[in-house]
Image (cartoon, rainbow, N blue to C red; front, side, top):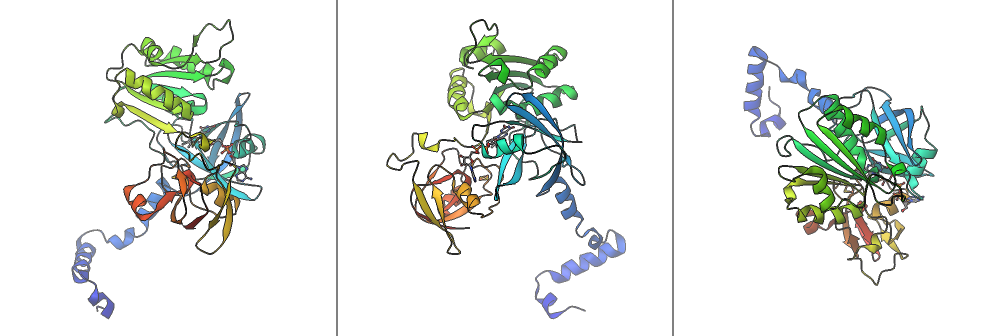
Length: 385
Ligand SMILES: Cc1cc2nc3c(=O)[nH]c(=O)nc-3n(C[C@H](O)[C@H](O)[C@H](O)COP(=O)(O)OP(=O)(O)OC[C@H]3O[C@@H](n4cnc5c(N)ncnc54)[C@H](O)[C@@H]3O)c2cc1C
Ligand code: FES
């Protein structure tokens, strides 16, 4: 017997008829109710509870946290993806993305490898305060910086700088562990040999596997250093890989590395579609961006009015997201590089400086949305969360 409401739903009779057929001859889909949602939650959970199983010192300034599931399991990921670690420090709830450096075929744990940043808010906390046994919270694995067999071919060149080697470590370990049919050449730039993370393991992998080769390039060598030195420029790339033909280049490192390396690859005739890059966050000194309005001092503090009437202070040299977090306002975020759009807010009034690397959709522009992790206040603002 149909209720009045059911009669008003277009197509209801047809659905009821199909359900009847299913019940008689096949699957009754009502039994599946909720199963898809639980499968999606298993593969793409919004939050993970992780226990620190080990803390491994890599260099004087870098350690790896080995994270296991505090309950349940760890979802699968693609080598090159990251998790956003969500922490509360001195009452401020914030997050920082860290690439997973362990390979995806290792399903018992995620390794994240953290380099200490001078006056770093979260990196110092993770390296100094977090200990084995602690429980941390994170997002599920995310990010687009991974190998796609349909478009990237089988000949890959990785250009890494500093802690930017971490997503490559996951990819290299996967290819060598699983003996995948893929060739990788890693050019790893560091200031000094002591700063090179995973150096010994990389040397051993290169010696053991014919499809992996590795060069460490030192930019500030001591006088008797015998290895490769300088910056990873066109000549050096060509001298190590022979030809760029048919190769796909992946770059990960500090901002300056992209500004330098991409033109060098262009000199060699590498097309855009053969260059993939991962951003490790935004510049720490955004006011050094050539497009920054010179009349706005990086020391300026503006007032941001929120939709509920609350007013908070916001520094010009900090992202809007950071200002909200300092004021105790929790905004969903993941990449913190202006890419994923999770931290979107509507700018009702005022002006912001949007980092050039932020990837806003056309519709965001039209509707006045900004990515708060990549938006810096340059006047008083009014925003809607
Ligand atoms: C996709 C991706 C992957 C990454 N992978 C890695 C990786 O594998 N390894 C790695 O080492 N790094 C990685 N990073 C960088 C990492 O996310 C952090 O940016 C880095 O560790 C520095 O964080 P930090 O908090 O120490 O420093 P910052 O973010 O520079 O912290 C200093 C800032 O914290 C803010 N701050 C200071 N005090 C407070 C306070 N009381 N309240 C609120 N804010 C405050 C200030 O604005 C200050 O500028 C990755 C980044 C991205 C985007
Ligand atoms: S957190 Fe991804 S765009 Fe801001």
